Image 1 (cartoon, rainbow, N blue to C red):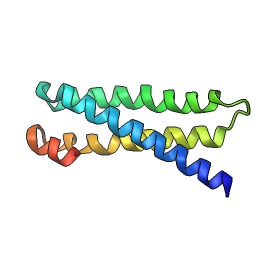
Image 2 (cartoon, rainbow, N blue to C red):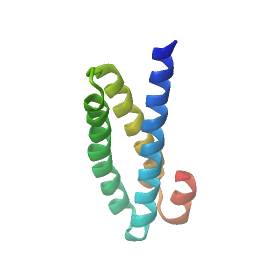
Image 3 (cartoon, rainbow, N blue to C red):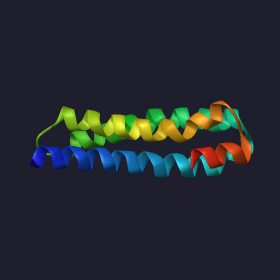
Image 4 (tube, rainbow, N blue to C red):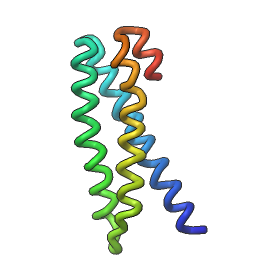
Length: 99
């Protein structure tokens, strides 16, 4: 049971980190257009997705690759989801869809 709780909390932490970072990025770059938002989201995906996975892997005394993968995947999915509307539209409609 402890393993499932740890897995769930790792996924929730990764997803919430990815969502907050992406929404901040979208709000900071939205006035520069769709291409800038998408390019910034791709950069965030690479940096944050790998960074969170590496941090999870290196944070414990016992290196747990499974938890690191869960962290990286949860963070990456949470980064991609709010950025998807910017592939199709921009401006206020994309911001609302992202939220």
